[in-house]
Length: 70
Image (cartoon, helix red, strand yellow):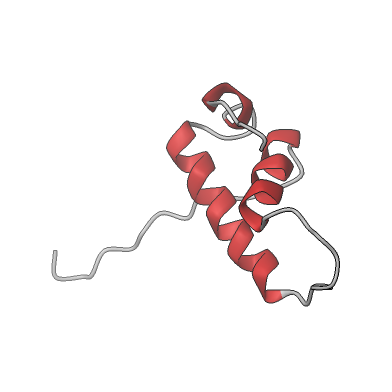
């Protein structure tokens, strides 16, 4: 089992909380693709954290829009 430290994942993200959110959303995207279930494969969250720590994931933060009444 590979362990990711906060310094590993924050090299390519602003903070550790954002990096976990980015990796989780990327793992959901990976889950949509078909996979070969016959061979042993890494878990999707592990693969997403590896890609994030290598800098292979490009993302952008989109600010939430507030309703007009506020």
